[in-house]
Length: 271
Image (cartoon, rainbow, N blue to C red; front, side, top):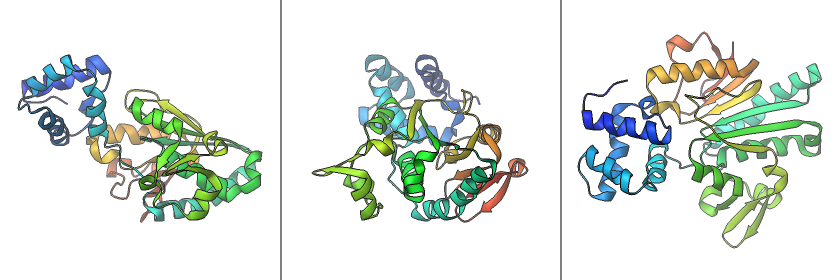
């Protein structure tokens, strides 16, 4: 993608050159809105002015990336998705593992933000498997570009706002409460591996049973969406699952890669 405004392109190229973050994967209109938020915070009016801000205040990159990637999430966000995952996807996956006598279960939470999604996946697994969870070699790859979010995920400490969708029994069983903070227990933390990863520029994880990529593709260009879906297809084991955001779907050019499994919850299966 190329941009018509030289100062806008200058800003995009600077971010790529100095931080390795390729903003060109996002729509131009979306980027301008996100840049505008940070520019108003600094009371500057041109992209060139904001380039100078980044030169003088490199810590600003953290807030900019947080605005671009919109790191706002909760445990069990969109509860019907997790209900479908628990009651329809996991039984299929576990039945196949039993049939092939495989104990390896690999899941990717792409664009994991501060960890609420991968931990929610881990909690679903722990609740369904119970004591049998020790029979499986489970890895949930939790990837994001933002270091601050990844470090928060690794710490595993959350406030009540992040947990308002969580059943009381989940909080009691899998968290340690300290005032208004909740520390997720080590038995759940051990299932999740947080990794800094650029899902467009870097190779995807391999031999996966399930990929969660929710509310990420809506901010990407069509070209980048296609590339990402092809990467997911290559990443998944035969008949593996892909879970997208509630407002996302497959483009016509990618419909041959995946079959509809639960269209209401945007769950697809590798064809």
